[in-house]
Image 1 (cartoon, helix red, strand yellow):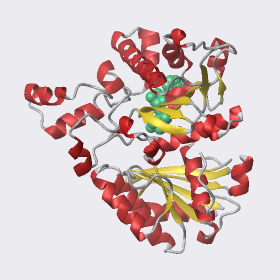
Image 2 (cartoon, helix red, strand yellow):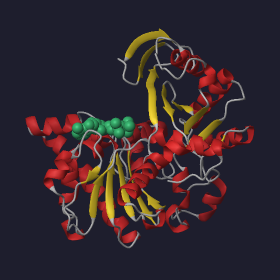
Image 3 (cartoon, helix red, strand yellow):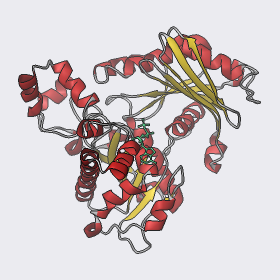
Image 4 (cartoon, protein in one colour):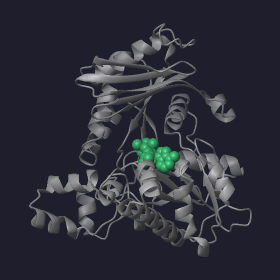
Length: 415
Ligand code: ADP
């Protein structure tokens, strides 16, 4: 089946076209046919698209809204320009899979999108006011363009973490606030944590129940997850993606009393404080330079910039603290797994994180650690390391494509 994966943001649309099937999933032979992104929707949009094995196409064109963006993508995929051999008309696209950020407590797995599901996603808007409306726009646009006959599947960032036990997802706030407003830890990046856990299971040839690991998604957004018996039992992001690790521009954990203190001292509104902790903090806030880890590492290496070094140090220290606390929470693990742009590519950051974990039994193999970059998958710890360490590049789009097939074909959703 040719599956169109859509990730619809507030002013962007990312897409991938993936050929997969139940047999292909089993044999791990899914094939990406094309991918791309349309940015600055609503004005002069910047469009980047590429069919596999062909040169990328880059152009600017006015694109009015989400529907126009979806139409544009489909028209290009089916056109002779794209040169995708197996796709010549809309009938060659067999299903669509949508990334949806928040599924609340309602969605614990990927589902076929019906009117009721759409209402359910709308109900979760109050939990993700920036993301869910954009995701819904993408779904509605695809329905309009494809018609109701095409199966469409929603895959939620939160779903994988719905196995968290009560003691891990409840905050120590008055319980009625949870009842009244559903305030609790939901966690995000679920598709990524689930994908790398699945690859880990394949590499180690384990059954799902034997997977006891800590997964670290370190990208622009960062989160850690504790997986026990294959289930997510704790994760660092909370009601929103702000909590937990230090990120590109998000602070991660901090004393919530700072919010009031800040607004009094700096005369900021609640909205301004929210923007400050989400968009001007993290690596960017500490360094005063950039939210981009690669640039920070260069700056630290080439100019010895003190605050670049400090940002890197605080980032790694926070990750170490989470690894330690999850090992306690889950009574030990077999491995830690690095993924996301930073986790997959930076041997230096992995070394800084694991360097402080020798008491816990993590011994990195310097050579393997250096080798495991740019999409390579493998172990980076020594043979006798008590706690193993792996690098496993994530592929959220592939998991969305696979779940779409599983939902359409009524086969169980495995991780
Ligand atoms: P997103 O969360 O937006 O998907 P990515 O997972 O691509 O982002 O991660 C982006 C981060 O990965 C950036 O901070 C970038 O600097 C970092 N990164 C990418 N390659 C490297 C590298 N070779 N060394 C260090 N950091 C890297």
